Image 1 (cartoon, rainbow, N blue to C red):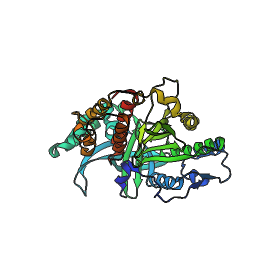
Image 2 (image 1 turned 180 degrees about the vertical axis):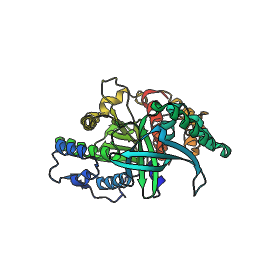
Image 3 (image 1 turned 30 degrees about the vertical axis):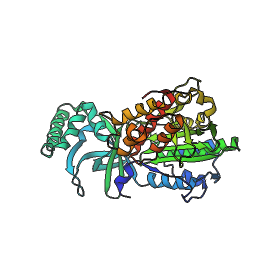
Image 4 (image 1 turned 90 degrees about the vertical axis):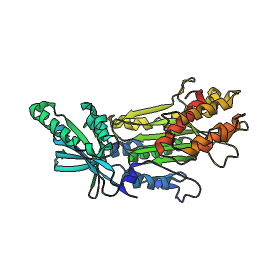
Length: 417
């Protein structure tokens, strides 16, 4: 894959055709952790002085996937003054598309000094740099008109004059830069308090906590149900193999979703999830995300990237509590309360597909799937669930799939958009 392919989250299928050993060793997991202090804390927490074998279905495949994405780039934590940073609009060599290049002078990473680094802006770095100046929208608008691109140079000049006349106005920022060979990419702009809890760290903690859970509950088996990953995003849904039958509709599995978005001012955490698969539906599934605590059941634990190592580890220690029982929760689900108008639920989902500002407006197959014209009148719950499960198999960008899952989940569970 090319560098920029790693910046886009991809959903990987983990089915029986995927070749994988069903074990990994703890020494290999620890090699994914770069921070020595965090590594030492993990070793002490889980007694990893010896190399232990951890077994789980398809675990080696998932380990290799995380390793590939987490080790593609070297991270540079560059501290620099705002006055020493400018931005330029250029055309990408291959595609000719406009790209933003940050020029950072006089930066340092500890005792290592950098005279100058030129890094392409990715993710939300434009917003993170210009939002405090109330210029984000203006700067992003310049790329739309080639003749206006030079205005960014004028903007740099005006701020340079400002900093010359107001020396104390310039603030120190942490510029997190990805490096691969001769290529540099500005990932995010933060303060020095930002900790490097990335996709590898979340993965390692998840596997260690699941292994601990299995040792305490030897009859429990886990299935890696869904994986979406990029250099800075991770979403793994892990389900208990044991399922609960919902009459003639299908089966429900208690699950957890491990998420980490390592971009700017974002978070990581563990979320209670439910995996539902209708009977006779070619393996398609629905992922449901409970969020209301009618039964006083905790549904998520999240933290930001500035928390201490102790809090980072504690966040994942809640995994065993978040495997909620579907039997406990199912009576509160709207779709399970013998609703008389299932077509109304379909219509609510369709409305969000076709509304003027819908993020799904370009996904024709998805809109057709929920349309009355193609689906017909949904007269029973079984048909509605089959349609919803089929929608999850449609290929789309991960961010869109995430929004789709939440949309369907909110309608089915709570009759809300």
